[in-house]
Length: 441
Image (cartoon, rainbow, N blue to C red; front, top):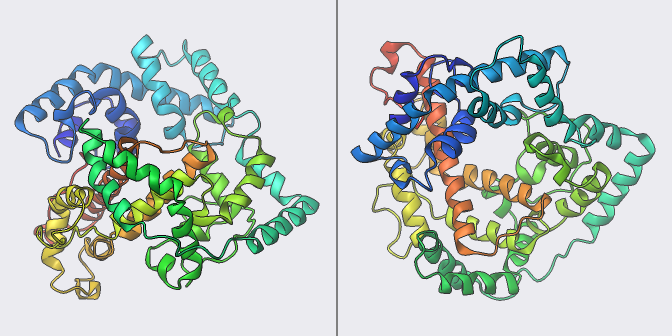
């Protein structure tokens, strides 16, 4: 709310703003958080609720960057105009250009719309040349060539048939998982993390992630209940020939094409990725592996995240989690339960049945999600783990794991805030009179 109000005080930042005048979620994610607010260096500005001192510091940082933010918006407008002239269609402009525009604005101020066209063109060519052939068009051409498509489909059949379907019950890892979830938040606060590191290492060494990933194939309803597949148990991946970010399936239902497509769209420097042919064959092996991940530490992260997610009760009362809940569960539950939209959804949810919620209320869909919070949480967690797996970024330290698990929770909360705000702005004021105001923060 504080950040939203501060943003509305700025002029000249419309290209970085949503229809309602607040900052776009990508503006917060790509510009404000990492480049202006810097919550790690300024902890008073971090978290969904800030103190009076935190609000004052936040205002100081935003207003101090006002000129750079206006120049960033102007550079983004110029880059989009030149992008259209060059007929570039690959990638999302906000993902690709926001931070480059901030860099240009910091070094050069506002652009001259005509004199700086060449700078904009050089920037665009630099951004898109780093793709080095790793484009969605190249991916489509690769998987649609008839003879190669037959070979790749045969490779999927072989990989799926060779899945390990035993060993799911090897060892009991619950105590080590709880130990990790107890130690993770403290590790980020630089408290003694030896216990958490030892527990995390034991999970990786004991292949706990692999065993739990195998269980998703062999225990009916588990993967479905977690929101990872629409089927009772996961089915073989399709090769696929197209993808749209608005119609992507659940994580374990996505085609090989869709999985690589999302990685390409999210990459700002594609030279760090393997060539297209290697991306495809590796993704086939990955999609037929436990948790649809190859790295054991990331499988452990998924397993630990599932244990965390199934303990979340944002729509419950603050005392609803069991006394034995881990520190990580208590921290995220406490933060989530203080959200304004959650407080309103709790009042609507007079029973555990989401169908009891008024259909006309814009909180209905979100309140239903809050009754099964592990679904949106694990969907987002899997996407982040998949991206790390493709780039071979393992997780070996408790503080790294906490950054990942906590970051997913913050992302889901922010997404809910944005959806509530959009829903409330779309209904008449008379209908929204009793609804809570929810703003981006």
